[in-house]
Length: 464
Image (cartoon, rainbow, N blue to C red):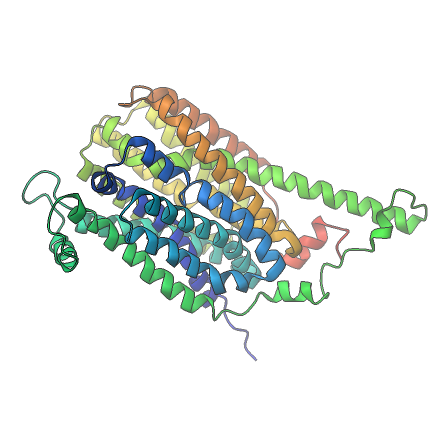
C-alpha cells in the first residue's frame, strides 16, 4: 500500500503560520484606526503590542501549548486551538471598548503561541526523511503569505487619509458594511476597514480548524505513548549507589543525554534569539523606519513592504526546494550573511536614497527566505526526542518572544522619536546578527538524511 504523502497535512498545519503572521500584521496595520475610534493613547497601543501575537501573548501560549502537545498529543491542539483563535478574533472585530480589544489581542496571541510548537513538531514527525526541510520551508512560506495578503487587503480597504481619492479601491465596500450597522462617518466608519481584515482571518481560521481536526495523530507520538519507542531505562539505573558496570554505563548515558539536552537548548536559543531580536523589530517597526529614517510616505512604505514580502515568499520557495539536498551549514551561513550585509549597507550606503532602500529591502527579503526561523523550526524539531520535543520548543519560544517584547520597548529609546538614533540602533542590529551567524554556522548539526529515530539514538543514548 502506497504511503500517504505528507504534503497535504503540511499545508493544513501551515495555516497556523499564516494566522500567526496575519494576526501580527492585521493588528499593527489597524492600530491607527482603533486609536482614532476609541481615543487611545500611545500607552494603550503599547499594551496591545505587548500582549499580542508578536510578543507576550504568543510567549505564554507557546509554553502552555508545548507541554499540552507532548502530554495529550499534537492532534489535540488542532482539535481545539483554532476555536480559541476564532474567539479572540471575534472579540477584536466586535470590540467597542479598549478592554474588549485588549482581551481579543490577548486571546488571539495565546492561541498563536499554543499552535506554534505543535505545528513545527507535527510537520517534522509526519514528514518523509528526504522532505523534512521542504515541509518546514512550505510552512514558512505561509508565514510570508499571511502578511502579504493582509497588507494588500488593508491597502484596498483603507479609509481616506488625505482627502477625496486617497481611500482604498474597496473602501466603498467598507461603507456598505458599516451602513448595515447604522455607521456612516468618523472613526467608527474607518475602523470597519480593520474589522473586515479580521473577518478574513476568522474565515481562514475556520477553514484551518475544519482541515486540522481531520488530521491523524503523529505516529511517533502514538508509538511513544504505547511504550514502543524511546523507553527510558529503569530509574534505579541512575542512582548514585550503582556499582555494577551495566548500571554505571546507564548512569553515564543518562548524564550525557541530559548534557546534550541543555547544550541543544543553548545552541538553538542563542542562534534564534539574537536573530529574532532584529526580526521582531523589523516586523513591527519596519514601515515606521522607512517613513522616519528613509523619508518615505506611508503609501510608499506599504508598497515597499508588500514587494519585500513577495520576495520573501519566492526565496522561501527556493529554500524549501534545496534545503534537503545541500549542506545545511553553508545554506544557513548564506542566509544570515544576507542579513549581515543588509545592515552593513545601512551603515555605509545608508537608506536615505531610494537605491539604498531598495538594496536593503532586497537583502532583507533574501535573508528572510533562508531565515534563521526556518532552520530553528527544522533543527528544534529534530534535536529533541519525541517525549519532550514540543515542550522544549515551547520553552524556547516563550523566552524568545518574551525577551523580544522587552527589547521592542527598549528599541524605541535607542531609535528616537524621529530616527535620530538609527545609526546606533543599526550597530546593535549588526552585532546581534553576527552572533547568530557565528553560533548557527559553527554548531550546525549534521541531521540531513537521517530519520528522527536515528537522530534521537545518536544524541540521547539513555533512550532506547
